[in-house]
Length: 296
Image 1 (cartoon, helix red, strand yellow):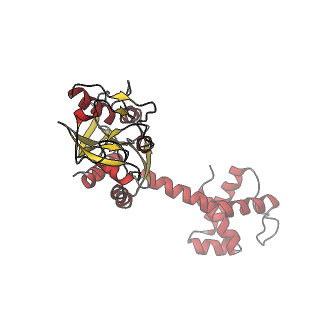
Image 2: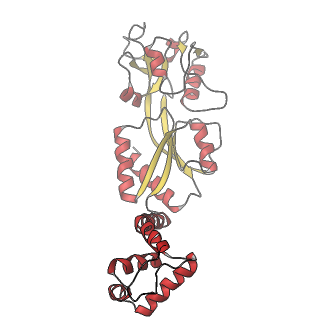
Image 3: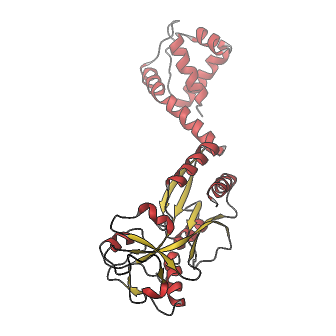
């Protein structure tokens, strides 16, 4: 099989004007260089050099072959170097998923950037529900996840590391009767319409909120339009209803929405990082770096 070394030999022979000058530049015997080119010709199935004259001359096929090699060999070398980096764990793409209720703040972005430089890896960030992240990790579609418990799927096969917890707030539109309160008790939301309610097959923040309401003796009423994504804040801004969100939503708050601290037992929301226990070394190192710099 033709090799990259033989391709480079051919290019240098043409650029140096002959086998003798090329062998001197390459520090190999002329006979060895001629043998490599002969092997290359046998492999490709046509003569590259016209050997009728003493002066080096490419055949028509050789001219085309050389021109194409010259244009593409650098790209081939780049591909090989990148492949070597991947084999050595460098420039590896680490797929990260985060719940829509886990915001990617500037602080987090800086940590990802530092990890990328320190570990020679790349990160791809996508939004995925907490429940779907568990399944995606088990099937290998993502490498690391950021979730808000509770989740319905078992986490037995995964590393589970709590990063931080934060208080919950009630998101209200400015004209709401409770918008001027310093804090709101969960019982005061008994008759409110919630723009986010639990999905039958998903856990996450909506389940935590539902459990808080149930603990206060009522079931959250559904608003006519609902969302489990950050777009729920837009629904609040449109006065469709209210929702309960974590503190970090302050960074993405629309002007028409106010956050009022929630008074309720067990009203803290955890952010947890998960990854496979049997993940390879590059993923393990990436996850540990992120955990160390995001945990607080």
